[in-house]
Image (cartoon, rainbow, N blue to C red; front, side, top):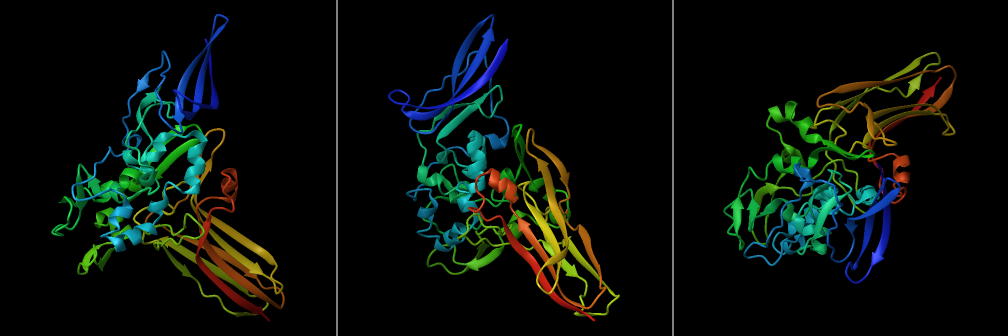
Length: 424
């Protein structure tokens, strides 16, 4: 029996009233071909599910396959949107608004990857609430993420979807606002639950390992990295570093009170060119002395030490496309670089025809490496020696493949030194 798929995009009116991607299962048997229609994604309006005959529906079992269930508005509130929360929690809202969490759905890298197959599971970390998702996934045909059994979500809130990882993602469950402080005399139903708001909540998204299809993998192993090193043993959690303590009013006209910063500083690479992202220091950088005057016949013997002293996980972490680049340049008086060395810290992957990790030299917690640079001065000259460390979200090649090159910030500068050297 011969089977193959054809994807067809079309617009329907009347009963379907939506633009859909249809998948035809073409089955060849004894000279006859049968086509079975299956709705893999519906972009607008309502839809019914046409399940393929003879195909098994596999239930969702992994926690990342399922969103946070539909949440109702707690008594005392008019909405669960971040904008609504800002009426009383303006400073916290302003912090969150500057975070990469607030644009996790709009992120061009995510949008580009997601739209290749419209895999609905990916939304469960970028818009985690069922309220934010247009469809409810009931299962997967033969366990394939590309063929979910879905139904339209009657409670879908488009504006809430655009808030990405919003206040309600962490703070609203079962008709209550969950906080970590208590005794706030809030106008809405509030429950204090420090355990719920612990690092376990962070790891639910930041420790996901799955193969969505042969060329699309999700490998966020930050939780595993943190769970096996000094940071956890010393009591440090995600919150210790990424939500540092701060004293300020937690709601308007209240006295200053110790709580947690909601900007979620991390890599420091912004999602958009007009956005500022706060960076956490992870690398401890030490360098040897560079003299400004050398005699002909002497040698520049430079050493740069980098140590993952401050992060409780490997660096880089998360998205496997991230990497550090250490660049050492020596240029002549006209600015022409004649000696250059580059060192890359990060994973390397093959993405096609099958995604697989080729190498991994991420810096583990407390790991240190030394990079050397030598040059023999053979004649009188004036040279410029430059040392630079940059942190990258992805390569230019991958940005080009995703059609976002020039539209998306790819890196930030972490460290730079420039030395003018004379050789006599």
